[in-house]
Image 1 (cartoon, helix red, strand yellow):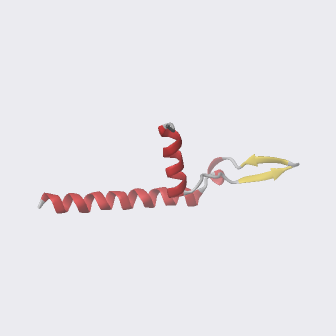
Image 2: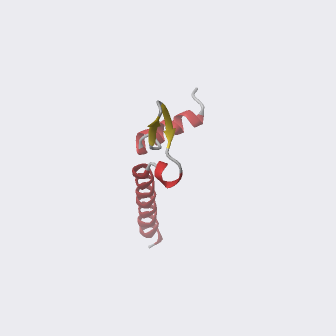
Image 3: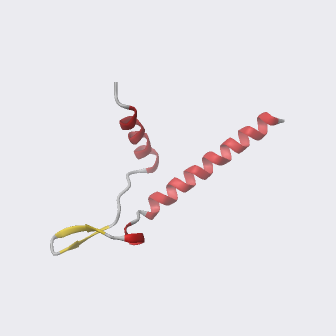
Length: 67
């Protein structure tokens, strides 16, 4: 049986893709960009959009069952 973490990580990779911070090469060394420059913004936007959809679905289901 696989650990829960590995299957949850695999599910998140399928759902949102892999998180890859932006890097640059300086003198042959790969360096992760610091601060906001290194953030993988498309990944963050996908995560926020998924949470918004999940919130909307729960609001819709809750509204249907409350009436």
